[in-house]
Length: 295
Image 1 (spheres, rainbow, N blue to C red):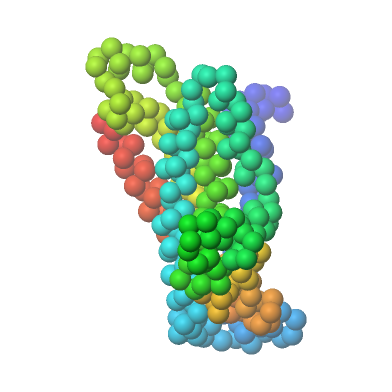
Image 2: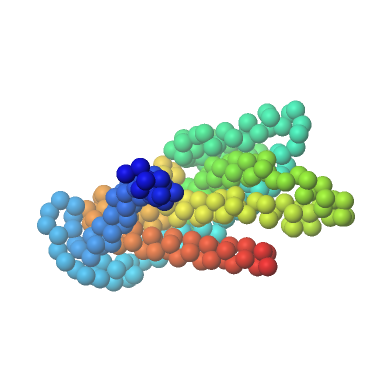
């Protein structure tokens, strides 16, 4: 037995360490995805017997106007949420200065990171209130009519995204600050000696060393933008008239309040496919860029 362990320890040890996390991943994540996809093929109220409808839920879903409104909002969320890594990186570069007062400034930027999204949603709901909110007071000070952001179907989605971005930018900021603390300063000093500065120094020396951090920031930002639920639930409940609903909230509303678990599972499946396709394309693009830079 000792001889067998000695000969095979190099591959048995990592295998044993991977068994538990791999098993949990298969049980909690993969099995849930498979069950959700399977459930989307049934008409089910969540308690009674299931009725097989095949692709009926998907046919109904693609003919549902609310689905296209939710999908459009998800695209808006995705595009605007990608500002979070960009702004987070810019703030990280600004805050990554060795000045005594920067500690206090950093702590101010970290505040939204430690607050729950529900709290942020409530705070921004007060901020947008057209009677006593700070935004209304600013409009009145300028002699303008206060704007009811959360009651206007043209501005409500933008208002919620701004509230959610406040927290996501702080998250990306922390990631990039951690990444900047690990970059090779000798490489930067050598580039400066060769005449590199400003944008060239950042583009060719600093940014390549932040590839892994950028990848994590973008992937998590994309996932958060597509699965955002709590901000909408707290601030508008999908209103007014469903104009701020996204696929995640529509799935919840359909399953819980309309008692259509099969239809909700179909929405979840579509959302999962959109998320998977986007992440796969981004991963392919990132790996191709890294391969080109290594050549």
